[in-house]
Image (cartoon, rainbow, N blue to C red; front, side):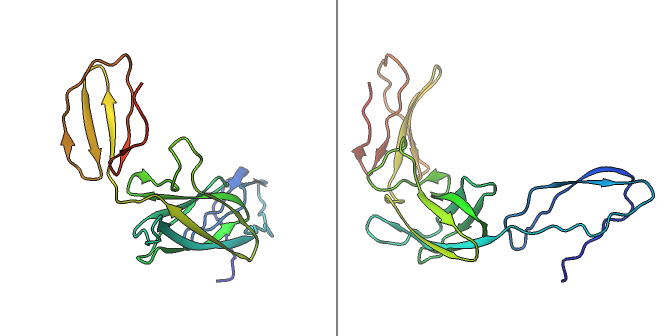
Length: 194
């Protein structure tokens, strides 16, 4: 393919020309305004893809075991990029636009945290992508196999929900001065009720 394109049958006027790249996905330039005069063609319009790099790495838990099926996302740039880690925990994201991103890990609906951090901490690793370069990032997350429970206190319902196992267990609801969340991971308390 030589990169040429033609848009035929357009009426005179202002147009916003936008490029999308899906296979493989990659960064694209900002849309450009183009004026099509009556009775004329616009020729020589040049759209250049921005410089891109590549991010490779691994996702492992605190014990050094690969986190199979984890999703790795690069956020914070103009575009969002993501892939699933292989069974050995490795991942590769190609054609990433030049700039700063944060590499974050998620498994299912749960965002995974670095060991020793809480939900209030900024998660993921800062990554700077340069043109025609490969950046390596090794992500370490707290165990992805522990159970996560949260206390739900609303006007109509007070119960414990257990995530990742799919089971729900009711517990007695003592009077609380206000709604609070109480998270547990692996049987240890991560926060205390007030």
